[in-house]
Length: 334
Image (cartoon, rainbow, N blue to C red; front, side, top):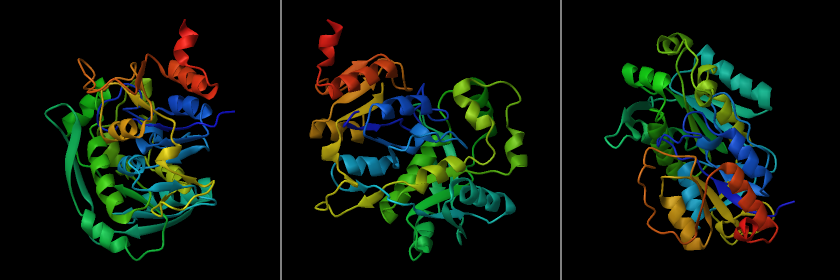
């Protein structure tokens, strides 16, 4: 039995070798088994219509995790369930069926809302190889949902992208072209509503099938090509996602603060706000070399102290269990 709490991140839009296409549920399940609580971002567990995160995972959008790690907020476990507000650009039989699948499949409390002003998103690829994009309608969305009674926000809207970029992604893999704009829009909304949020793209099946592959894709992309809605993973994640607690003096078994975090597991080739926050707080970062990003080749970390480099998620699990046992993992290698 472990008493360690951790954070497991798969950054969005960087082409992570493991999890950059359709999450990395095997790795999450392994590290969660070594943890009391494991904070995960949606990109780590959202595999289109599939989300197999264990019950001890705390699901939080990336910029929310950033704020958690710097001590701006705590995470409060949901004792029962969240009231989910699901917003769409237009209510159709398609997304009504999606909502009902969450009600029937999860026992979730979901309200479907049509936006007055459509949320428009377009995916683009940046010059450095990362995914980005442009958007409009975020402020209008925030204003419309302001007076609704809800605990978590599920957003399902289309993401426009160049057809050739889409076809190239299906054929050759690489950076998921939709991930960057999803992360950007989710951050903008999360910082304004201060509730759990996640986004899923939507297209009618006819529209999606125009660019849908009719060949076998690599296994890390397979959840995407068997999915019809991309939304059930979001509804599962938000169903019992932790609430954002801004009373930093409130304590209890249901409250998790950055001071409770014992480690973070990260891919190789990324260094951003969560890494800086962990190092400032003295939280060791376990960097897994096998999970590369589009920046990994020749990537230099600005600091090495506080970072443990290891080759695989299997060895990362061993390091965490060594910590649980009170053993310096380096002594096991001697």
